[in-house]
Structures are given as structure tokens and as C-alpha cells.
Image 1 (cartoon, rainbow, N blue to C red):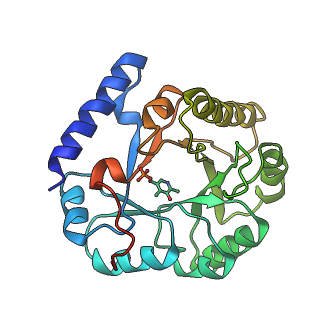
Image 2: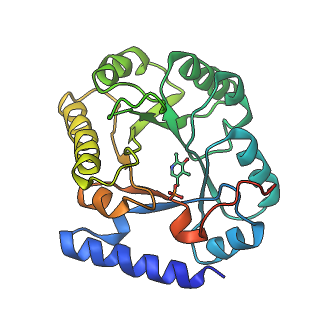
Length: 233
Ligand SMILES: *Cc1c(COP(=O)(O)O)cnc(C)c1O
């Protein structure tokens, strides 16, 4: 049963929004379903949490099958290899994790074949952690200028993960830098580029993320409880 978690979470998000003067409606929650049992995911969907995120293509594909026929928006949130792009193009609402040319080329090619436009975010490794993927901050604008002419891939914003630390100032600094980078990109008025989304904030840090302007939260444990990686989905 996760209804209680969702009730508490909704109240919490609403309180944070009230406190910082934001509208709840402008914030989307992606329910991150790594290792989660299907019945709990169905409960979340019934609760109108119908944006589902997975960090691996293979897991996402299992969800396509398991949840077939349901009104679900799928989000690819984890690092993506170019040879896997073909398996998700046309099926996902948003890819949060674009950070290299080989992936861009595949998204463009596969989307063009299907005559669709694929929406993506650029993942930025603000804290420059070795363990995380993503473009460095200073690489983002040159990257955009290199890929903006790909007509079948549309950049809609930026994504980051904060370091896993206690120090709230480090987390806040990460999110603030992502927002400032978005503002800098906005100020350049690239033709056809609409930076609509900042995907930042997970279970441990979504409050700070909302304060710093996030409009997509990627939440797993606060909804579904701790993950059990020994489980097959
Ligand atoms: C697992 C994961 C999340 C969710 O993390 P929680 O701490 O469970 O909220 C968010 N984003 C990415 C990229 C993840 O892999």
C-alpha cells in the first residue's frame, strides 16, 4: 500500500510550494519504479502518478509490456548507450539523460525514420563527480550549438543529480547552478529552443530542488519505500 506515502508526499510538495510561492501544478512528479512490484506501480498510476521513470533501457522495456494499455508517460532517466536508443524512441515521453554526440545521432536518426520528434533533456554533471555521467557545465552551450539543427530531436531543458552528501549547501549550489545555466541558455534566444524543464530533485533532496526552481522531480523511495535490488521485476 502506497496511498499513504502518496498522500503525505502530496501534502509535503504542496507545503513547500506554498512556502516558496510556487504553483503545485507547474511541478511534475516522475515515479521512479526501479525494482518496484507491479501492483504498487499500478496503485501509483491509479493515484494519477502516471509518469514512470526507469534508469535502464531493459527495465523500461519490461514496463512497456507490463503496463501495456494503460495511460502512462515513460521517462528514461538513466545513462543511455547509443545502441539502445532504438529500443525506446517513439515510446518515451522524455529522455532525461542525453550527454554525448553518439546518442544524439541515434536519437535523430531513429526519430527521423519514425517521422517523430523526440524530446530530451541534457544531463549535466554540475558537481563533476567521476561516478556520474553528464556534460560538464561549460560543455553544455557548445553542445547545444552543435546539436540544435537536428530536427527530430528537441531539447526541452536540463537534468542533474546532486551529490549524495549531508551538506545542504552543496546540494543547493548544484541545483542553483543548473537553474542559472538554464537562464543563461534562455538569454541566448536560440531559434526553436524552448528550455521548459529542470529535472532535479530525488527523495533526499526534492525540497531544495523545488526551492531552486525544479519542475520535474524524480522520486522513487519516498513513494515506494526502500529498493530491494535482489528482486527481479
Ligand atoms: C533512482 C533514481 C532516482 C530516484 O531516487 P530516489 O532516491 O529513490 O528518489 C532519480 N533519478 C535517477 C536518475 C535515479 O536513477
